Image (cartoon, rainbow over all chains, first blue to last red; front, side, top):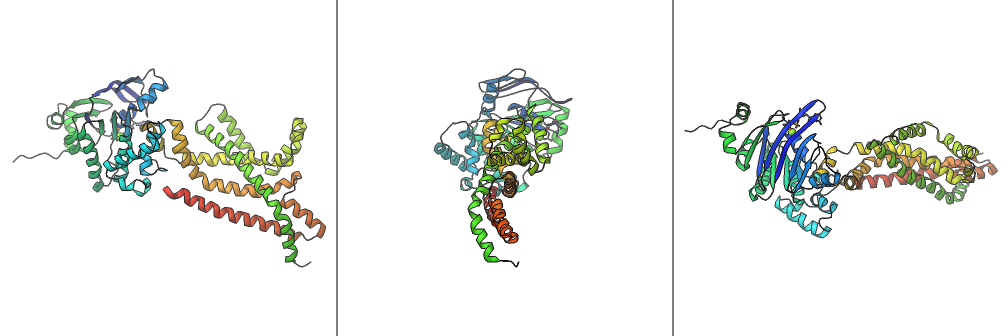
Length: 250
Length: 221
Ligand SMILES: Nc1ncnc2c1ncn2[C@@H]1O[C@H](COP(=O)(O)OP(=O)(O)OP(=O)(O)O)[C@@H](O)[C@H]1O
Ligand SMILES: [Mg+2]
């Protein structure tokens, strides 16, 4: 479903992705962990070419792109296979919540306005914000904005949703509402999800697969059980020990 | 000669019919300057080679020369080099001159407006598969326009005032008409005070409109 092969990305002389391989099945939830600067954000941003990789191949659904030769048509097709949820939400400021959700449907003429609005309201209901449909984003809390941005991503019916630290800009008391929203979508196992997060308990609970990145490479991957309980790599172990409170069995 | 308020009101009555010329000059110039200014701002935004350098020279030139020098250059100077320009009327010459000059100012205002739109807005468009062209039309430019609105209003207000330079090209606007009337009666103070009063009222009304428009545009702030 999602297949990344030998992906490389440089910023000037700095090699940020050093040949990343990753696959995900339809409906699979993949948590991406790693310390700051390891290239997690860059990896996600290469998947919709917000950053342009130098080398490698990206395949999402039926669309496959080689970084060294692709047409702008292929690029547009690739971009329409995924939807991104940003750390700082990036809702369209000049659009109401409902318009934020329906914009991509109207832009790409997927639906007419009436159907798009009905569908948009349905999605806002799913994230618990139907009553905010005519409100502008600036009037919402961070947690509410992030839930709208999740509805906006769902509207695209993407093959894969890319979450880049969706809760790390939020006040602690707002984290749970966003994680619950993501969990509810994850549990349906309809959309593939790549989630970069520092919420270890959340990753452990919802992910089907956990990936640990370090210095532009994937050092280790496995089920949450494998990674959190028996990490093979010493770096993974060190990293996790900083986040996980040891479990005491009495 | 003491101040004669009745005379001033007479002048006012005679010159008010000329205000549409002033407004027409300002609106037409604003419209053309807006289109050209947006073009220049986009050329700079997308760093289009060659055009970008031309735009820089253009802006620097038209920002530097006094409006009256520019109008003389166009109306009296151009026909000497290009004979077809001798057919140009004072009205067109004024609109051309004011448009060219204010396009330079507006391009800077639009550019600042574009720069103040958060990069995250375009990234979010791409992130949900919206094309860049659509993103500019529906998300980026409307926000840039809102940011540019105060600067645009100021440009329009100075255009209203600058339009009175048209009389130096022989166009009879309200200022020129007042001057004609005053040179008969020698009551310059009343005549020019009437002109000043009209400009004052125009600008006050425009400022009110501007405030309403800005309040409306601020609804999503
Ligand atoms: N636009 C850019 N220009 C230059 N260098 C960049 C750019 N974006 C990222 N980098 C560098 O690339 C490296 C990886 O950055 P990236 O943002 O992908 O890390 P990350 O794993 O997401 O980190 P964090 O957990 O802090 O978000 C870092 O060294 C960063 O400084
Ligand atoms: Mg990051």
